[in-house]
Structures are given as structure tokens and as C-alpha cells.
Image (cartoon, rainbow, N blue to C red):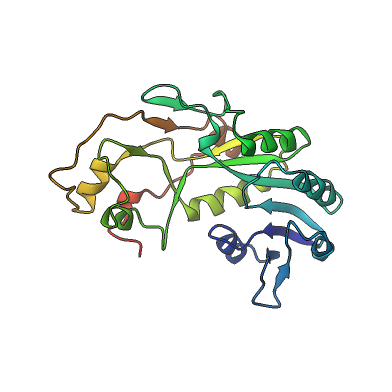
Length: 239
């Protein structure tokens, strides 16, 4: 039996597998014999999934019935299921709002509806902030002109922290928890631009915007320690 079965070999999944000696990862188009062929929409591939103590579901839920059929199948081969989410599932209603696991959820979003249904069946939902790391460099987002407003803030988490926290929390054998994986601090793009020595265009209009800060009420209590997070300002470049 594997310790971890990782569904999806994307940005997070491909890094989880490197930190988990007794683990296996899946892909819809595996390029190695060490990667399991799995496609959510091809139920014949579900039989390829081996028994594992923990399954980490890295792709977004869409509130389709096939997801719930998969969940029932996974429950037969694992003790624990973790599903990755995004902080956009929370309602954001006013400027500088602090959002925690107790904040109101936005049930107009199909992803959230699916997650809460699966959570009621025992799944743990790990809600992720904006992911940065190698090949996801905030400096490049500025250089490419993707950030139009220096007043905007961003809640970032390094992919290495996601991996570490996921594995540490998985060891606790949790059930039906929603946990925010976050630093508890937001960064303004103006501050990040200064750090990277980037200047916004002079004619750019810095319009007002509704900001939010993502925090967790659960991380320290569950892990019984303060995790030391990597911050975007720890790096001059990540490319």
C-alpha cells in the first residue's frame, strides 16, 4: 500500500511526488511507467488506482456527478481524501476583509457546492492562496503587464509550503475539515514592485479596489507549532 496517491501531475502534484518516497502520481497522459494512467471522465482508468493511506485530489471540482462517483470509488481504496480548493470560494464583501475558515462561503460557485458535498462525506478541503514558486514568479507577472493596479493586494503561498503543510496535516488523520493554507499576510503589488525594482507605467490609474487578507484559525492549533513560510520578498527572482 502507498502512503499517498496523488491525483494530478500538475504544479502541486509534481512536487508532492518528489517529497513523498512511498507515493504514486496520476496523469491523463502519462509519460512514464512510474505514472498511473487516470482520467476522471474515463471510468475504465479508475481501476488503475492502487490502495493508499491518503489520496490527494489536486484538480478543481466542477460539481459534476462523475466526481461523486469517483469519491465513492476512492473511499474503497483509502483511509483519507484531501481535495485542493481556492480562496475564491469565500464571499468577499468589503475592503480589507479578513477571511478565515469561519467566513461565509459562496454557494453560487459550482466548485464550492461540490467541495462541501464531498466534505460532508468525509473529505478534507485544503483551501490554497495564490501559488508562487519556480516558473510562477510574481516578478514575471509584473514584467508581463498582468498586474494593472498597484493598490491591489495578493495572498501568496509558496508551493514548497503547500507540499510541507499537506503532508504534515495528512499525518493527523483528519476528517471533514476545511483548512486555509496561507501565510496570514497579504502583499500589495506596490510593495512587491518596489522589492523587484519594477516601476508601474506613469499613466497607470491606481483605481481603488476591495482587498482581503486570508488567515487560518486552524493551522497552528492542528500542527501545534508555527510554520515558517516562504514569502515572495524572500526572493529576487524565481525563474
